[in-house]
Length: 170
Image (tube, rainbow, N blue to C red; front, side, top):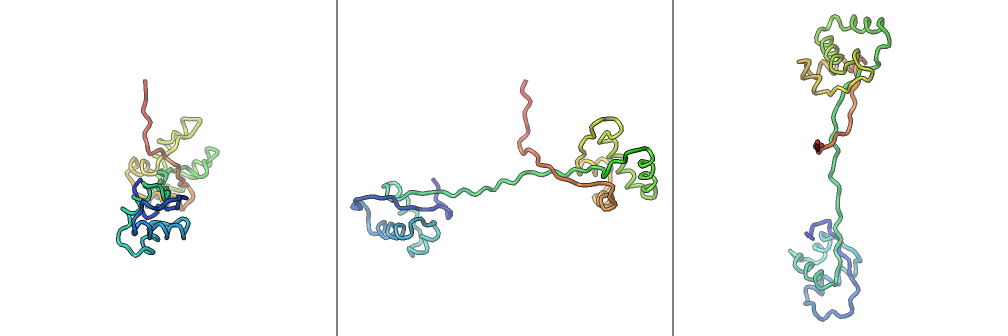
């Protein structure tokens, strides 16, 4: 085990302390008084520069037990998606939406590209459209997308993505 600052050290009951030197005895006394101490705190209390060799020796001799605290640093990968908000229910609602964006060709183009990518008019189930893919395929910018979001036409949402790609086994 690699000793790190978040390693906790605990005393182990041991009858004879004949095979330890003065340095080990000093460190062992501090550990027994504290009944569980971090490596940093033990370093400060002992007044020594490097106690790692002493800790390793005491551990090998069975006088102390080491417990490594593991901190989780995993963060799930999130991917941003775009969806129309809400999906117009009838032909009249679609015409109103297109007429609303008629004055802004870049916004209208992004909506049209979204409709193509999501297969809104072709599929029973609307496909998910990634934010970056929509921006790239429409040849537009994040500003255009943000404007459509602020108008309530699009909605952004995030989903966890696997960091490891699945392999196709045949």
